[in-house]
Length: 203
Image (cartoon, rainbow, N blue to C red; front, side, top):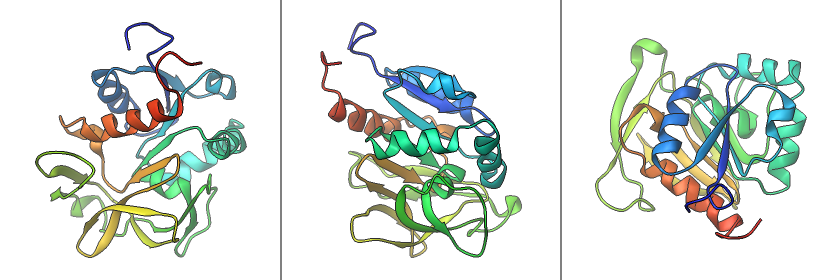
């Protein structure tokens, strides 16, 4: 992928959270990136990342800026979407014990702040069979987990008996923050999903 027609353009929702870190990780893996704060900035994207942050705040801002329905529509059309931490919650079809705006594309139920508050943040080595080599360094900050998942959801990693990464069709979610590590293998996996939808040399 050497020119702009072959290099994927990935939007990073930039209303709140670790969007700059996602841009850096994606660019290290060979993608072009665009910050997304308005509906018009979704035009022409090959994929989208919903970063960590505060899921209730991000959801309300998505409604305010007319992004929620637009992102939901793109996901239903097959656009690859990566959701990390708060992004996992927003992509979930349901959230345990709370009401908030959701994109709601994935057949999972999420539990917010499941591993505890900010002071309970931690790192853990995670086995992700889809990623070759050593375990992946999972950074958990006020992290959710996947409480339950439908039959079409592929659980990719667990921690302490709970699902913390999963994939369903064009959707990839993690409860942890891959963008806060030097390991870009998970972003590389996401770009493989993007390439699978748009083979090199095709529009």
